Length: 204
Image (cartoon, rainbow, N blue to C red; front, side):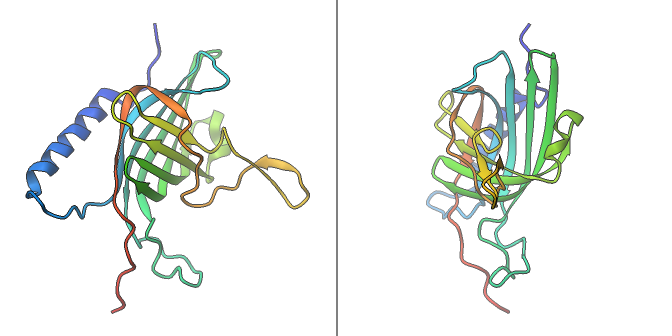
């Protein structure tokens, strides 16, 4: 019997469809769309390399929240136009061990273009098998190609880095950094709602 994840792909898709329908009714024809950028949905995907019997899934519920994360650096007092909030849930069923390993990240940055999104988050919860991820930033990319044509990418499988001594190790991931969406969705659906980055708020 094929294993699936417990984040309700069908339920997530239904919630997205309802949200879109409500928004369509609420917005008058020709009105400017000032809603925040958003990435939603849950799906399983297949890697284009290292094929195995594992099942991997990401669930996104993220939205832009510009200038909400001030940082103590010159120019960072108001935050960034790419500031975001929300959650990414990751699950990986290991066929060899018949266990599912999960972790969860709090979204801190997101940039979109039509049909595409790049976002990052800090891991706030992890099963013991993934405890090395706790407190670290991870990155994701999403391509919304329409149902059956979505793709995702992520940092920890496709990125490495060198320190000052030339030694290789895991990459240090900055905000909104992730590779292109390299993995094909096999079940489920993602939705990207694009919004342009905005200018900072005016000084009072």
